[in-house]
Amino acid sequence: MKTDLYTKTILTVIAIALVANVIQHINPISEANAAKTDFNKYAAIPINNDGSINVKVVSDMDVNIRSVGGSSIYGALPINLKEIGGSSFYGALPMNLKEISGSSVSTSYGIPVNIEAVDGSSVYGAVPTKEKQ
Image (cartoon, rainbow, N blue to C red):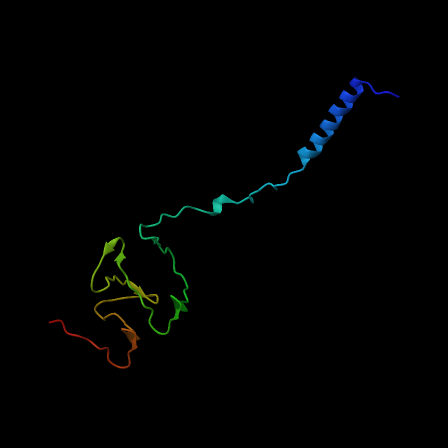
């Protein structure tokens, strides 16, 4: 049986369509799909020019600091305050105590103070003081 040009053409078109159909479903590079994220849980935080962020604590928080910069903390916590409420201060730390351990503070009786260390050294007995000249 002899095949004519028409039959060869139709069979060639069918073969090309079948090959195209197979190639269409082969993907050598897999698609990248992002995981669904609940963006309501995240917010943008403004960062200062030096890379730090401003933090405002709005309630009491139980904190247990074991180390700072890889060094263990024993006794007093080393703190270096640069500003409070957006205002720089030098010298003594400005304080306005209204209550200590649930009891009101009266300046007529003095403020109860428990000093455990000065300049990293433990204090036993009297607190070392310096007079201003």
